[in-house]
Length: 66
Length: 320
Ligand code: SF4
Ligand SMILES: [Zn+2]
Ligand SMILES: [Zn+2]
Image (tube, rainbow over all chains, first blue to last red; front, top):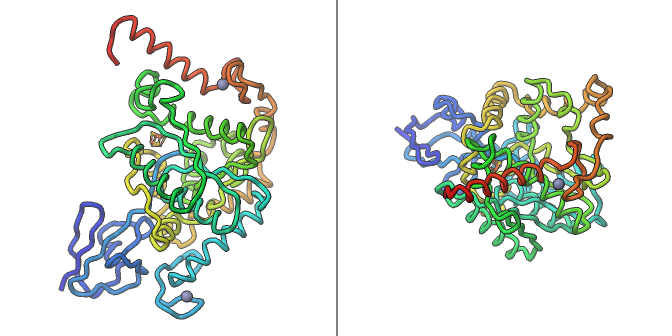
């Protein structure tokens, strides 16, 4: 009963059945700092993780000063 | 979650607005909001010639896209910094910028620092006292100087940058932690023009960072995903993370931190007496740009220091 969450070159295994938001908070990833996608499609973070889901997170924080 | 406008499956939920939208409605919503911010803050009008500073990152490319979709006359300015850092940062971000411009048939001005000054940013930074560890100081001041100069010389009415709410809130947080009142006074979405200084505007100042990223993704805009290698460990990123932790517990915390600052600024203490600094501007004796430092402006002074140091090193036969 697992889904996988990828962020850059890291991979996390989480239990399916919970929302993406709860999974992120469990993993100490700030939901504000990422966008979850599945097969390239953007998802809202209330989406329930399904068995064998592969969720790719896009990091949105950038730091370069202008 | 469903789109508030049409009931289709939503792709983004903006908790601070209690608003979820589908792809199509989101791609409509961003330009409409931008137009409202431009209008409400008197940033510019359709007659104005606009120069957008593009780095190849998401915010600046999205801004260029949105402004041109809204029908503004907007050209891009890309500044070549010559930063490699193992991921070919400058070369890659230039490639994203040029292909965006070509695909959308937009005009791009490219200004390469090494071509004009003889040295790229990392090499120049290694020759200054402050820049040995992090080139951000000379990099930042060079970018600001060049943006203004290119805008003035080419008669643009306004220079726009892709700063988003997270950028602005992080800067505000840093300025507030240290009570840098002179900076607080000048911080805002619009800086009016003064003699020799072009008007500046930040049309995205109310969008969260994830909103510009979502727009890029949904519009299929390819951008430089990797950070400048020198941004690693930057204070601004640390402040953004802190603010995001606050936001996770209190939706809208970032937005209200910044917006209530703007309201407070109109009525509060930072307003007294601080304009003095601005009145003391005079032209730099070398480049003619307005400056508050005597004789040379910071840009000319710093690059002179770099060239002097370079000459000394060459004389001593030290390879840089
Ligand atoms: S992180 Fe520093 S060196 Fe890199 S682009 Fe930004 S200011 Fe320049
Ligand atoms: Zn919709
Ligand atoms: Zn000067």
